[in-house]
Image 1 (cartoon, each protein chain N blue to C red):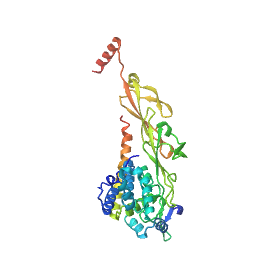
Image 2: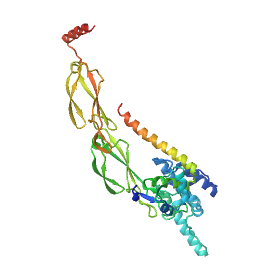
Image 3: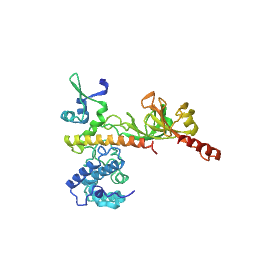
Image 4: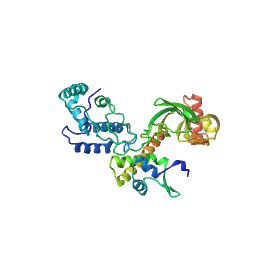
Length: 96
Length: 305
């Protein structure tokens, strides 16, 4: 794992003005992967967009953790269905 | 520039209390928040309108000004100047205080408030954030790129202009229609020193060839004359990048499909690896038979029955 691609959770808390418990809760619910390297916790930079989304939904719309889990599940399903739809539309071209 | 009915935007009437406004805003924001409506431009627009309406109606000073001038908003500044002059004369005070409204954060183009808002309250009139002042990543940009199928057979470099900036990027071979790729760091600038957003490019690929494509495989139909189908022979068929000679087995049936391994389309992100080409034979039966031909075919028919 390249350390350059990891952001310490401590830094995230400072930068986004959030409690560490929030990041821990996201991790416990499987909403955010936290990586521990030599006793320091990190989040991979690829997961930042997802983290920011959870942050906005939680703080701005006051959606609790259970709500975030449900939303993530539904958004993932939506994304899969959209992908499937594109694939099917591309396949449909074979029969047109 | 049109008058905007902020009460209507928040589905409220003019008697709405501060609590009603907060409740209505929260309810509608949860419905139209861009995080909950990915790739939905109409929801994004509606969310911006909600933010703007909330910005005005949740701030007592802005709401007062809005309620007072309503449809005469274009003359609001004029009225204000006169009013201020009058209050100075009386030794009173006028003008408007700072914003107190809170609009939701995130990279959703919140800055795109309407001209109506800018005209009535000025560019610096909006209150920002929800108390936190996080460093947010910049806005993600979305762009569409129209290409022909033949353009994505091999990787090539192309210069795109996005928001006035030229970006040179490599279009990967084998990219699919409607596929979206992310170009990191080419979006809008971050908030409070946050990182730049990303650029998402969706490819719209038009098929300018005779081939049909499904991922890395190509499909084509080749017409086969009756006698070659019946007795066998050799034909030349088109592939995506040239021609190949094909041996036709005797008694080839109409609709027979053959696979030409490695003659398909480039595999995405695996340049040099190719899919397969599937050719379907469409046997053409002779038409406009002469009487001699008819006679001979009838004889053949008798032989078979």
